[in-house]
Amino acid sequence: MPGAGATATKSGSHCHVPPMPAGHAFLIPFGSKSNMATLKDQKKRPPQDKIIVVGVGAVGMACAIFFLRTPKIVSGKDYNVTANSKLVIITAWACEQEGESRLNLVQPNVNIFKFIIPNVVKYSTNCNLLIVSNPVDILTYVAWKINGFPKNCIIGSGWLGVHPLSCHGWVLGERGDSSVPVWSGVNVADVSLKTLHPDLGTDTDNAYEVIKLKGWDIGPSVADLAESIMKNLRRVHLISTMIKGLYGIKDNVFLNVPCILGQNGISDLVKVSLTPEEEICLKKSAVTLWGIQKTCNFIFVYLFIVIL
Image (tube, rainbow, N blue to C red):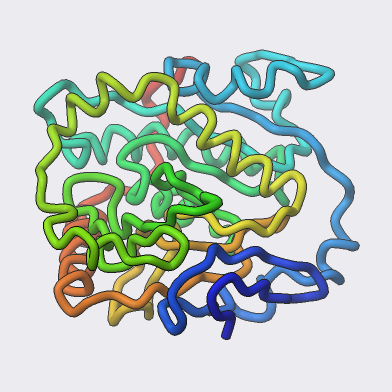
């Protein structure tokens, strides 16, 4: 178990875990042995250096702009241009209006994904999928449900604040209204901010005001995730992944937790110690998403057009 500032080793490569108070977090190998990243698996795969962004709205462009310095850029509406990709970033979704919950748009987005995911997988059978579309946690589950990829290869973009050098804190659960900020674990150089400021985390922010001010923030965040995958950096990121069995959650839900991310996707989860109140909130987040997921219709009916 890595302690504060430790470097954990797995399969001969190093992963860097941000410093945390002793006993506050530990690694959990992710998935079964058959679909975990190993050196043998890495050698079997042909070299790939291709990134695809599906969807070129505001979010897609915010992500794509960080790849503009790459040697070759190709655009198109035919999915054959995505062939042999190492990483496919999906940003296409039906956007919500102000005051409307992202969860209200689940089924329209499921319909979009029923078109996109099979076409992507058809041309890139060994890719990692990075889902940015909202509601990201449910749509990451939808992508996993549709294509049957190993869960370590399906990743949902998480919150900002990834692998910071000094300040450490996590927002677990849904990337939405039922998210759980773990204020008890926020620290700078192992100094608990909650101890210094007991009122930390009591303010309520207006979500739509944050949306107006955040600008292009999703772009560098997604580029950061892409770099960890493409360069096999094995850094810790807060991303959406399957957490069934963690924190007493019994359903197939994808929620934001710290994970080690490399060229084969997620290799380990970093389990953060929660207070009883935080764990209850996380379970409520899981129940909320599972209730929505159960209503999703996965019957494939191609009666719509997706414009990329």
